[in-house]
Image (cartoon, rainbow, N blue to C red; front, side, top):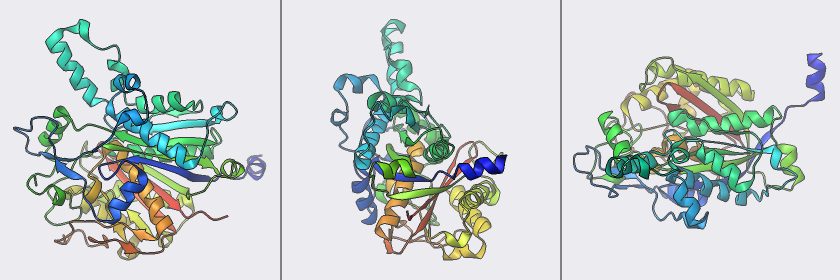
Length: 422
């Protein structure tokens, strides 16, 4: 009987039809991509609050963002900055896809947009109110403002998406897991379209202090644009950023029926847990290797089918060394032949938004036949000896790209995105 059901229900293919982004490099996906190809850095001195006593005083900040372009002032005041970013990137993605959510399709279009940390800015602002003015002055929008799922909730409310509505929170793997889970939601038939991605805005006094205390951020304060240097032997930590990335995923026939422009196809998704340490990756990148191998297996691809890897590449000593080892474990000798770059060298680390923005970069890489570089790669690390596309973009035909994300808690996620063909 199971064989008969499979014969009657062919596999549902899932394609990408729209993209939107708000990042330290630009306020749209296209502006961000062009800045990437130009090798620009979005890392700057952080001036939003007094940085006295902070060991790291730089960050990859979003500049010039105006929520009034996407919502009313009243709506903007009720939600945290990360949710504002989510709505903005979602609006861009829907417009790019030319997808109108209407009563006849709304129940079949869902949302899966996550955040690694959520409304930290709201928490800090309201805690100050509590201390200075008392409990009676706390905003009734405190709780809606801080919960991680409010980006997804606001996208559903704003655009009328009544299908599956979920939020993934897996630290720095959030954006990748969100797109991967949305892909699986469509594949199993629970939706025909999904708004998927991640958003983050934790460049706050507490957020910065916490990562400073963890001693995981770069302290190259005098050279902010040279601070994020993945795989370089002189790297001294990651650079925290903020922003959002959102894609529109659709079941192939649904997209074709409405005449959508198909940008790429999602063909594989892998995920695993390190079961090792709260912040450090598993030795030799073992967990990441399993995630990559799972994605390859589920996509029905061989390692030699991958033309490019967008690395997690955080610019920390442990991540870069272990990701390199994990790629070697998953790909064998072919690992030395795959171009692999870290766009975090330019965007900084967008935490819960990172994987979503990097999936967008994979689509743009396939579309434009050019690979964005890893900037600031000047001093090779003997433990990191793969092809990291150093410092300048590279023209290349990329038909199939892999994107990796790894997060605190031992979360690993891998997406495989392919050039669309009939």
